[in-house]
Image (cartoon, rainbow, N blue to C red):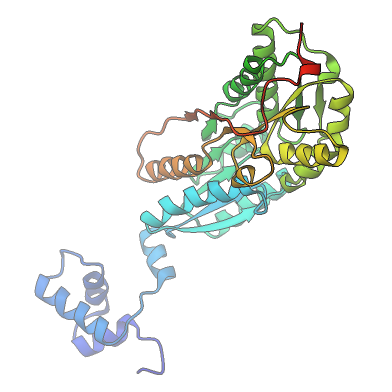
Length: 348
């Protein structure tokens, strides 16, 4: 018997009981006496019985797995989000199936379709465009689904979501630069994350307006929507920085840390000293920001907590508990890329 997989029928034959009795005993069913349960479970251990996970999932109507869609596995931001999801999933004995959408709505829907065919118990999607699909199609998605930092400009009430307070984070970042004495502050944004970009741009403008600063049009520079991959943001930051330098800004708030890192590299190549000539502030607080030179001032986005909260919400949905959307607050992390303007840039 050691040459082949041990089945429930094998255990039943040796124990002298029915197939259903063994099946119930292995599930610790109270319908089987304690003595019989213990005897069958001990026999199963001695025979090295390995439960058939597929058969169990069909019986329980659960696969004990969830699907997770992120934009890119190469982006350090999503590494932390995935870690938060996986840590909580592991505690609940759930496996995580991971795939990337690369900012492509068609790929996102294809991934969701694949997860449906694999009968996952639930789905978590980061940076989703999902809310843009018709409500009728969304209503047909019966698998519990949680969105992290949805990028759809109009949110669909069919889905629960957890997100960061983007507008507040941007406002705090720009207020930090204003408090340092900067009056000519640029914004370096992206075109492929419409919701977070519009909210961070709103926070940027709110901070300037509150301080009585009227921004010039050329203080805002945006990457084109064709830049689909997050990991390319550093290159975009390098390419777009000269436009803001030409506009005469003394500080720049960047939509994310990778853009800020790219801007920092461009500054080094152009002989612009940071923060003496130009201050930079990013958004996310990815680990890389601590190790660049100089270390990056940034808004800390609770990436790990986004993943954790999404998984907690999904578990609540699976247990038919009420779930409310969550809005997490970012906070400022001051390092060495922000300082008072150089003497030649100071106002008055």
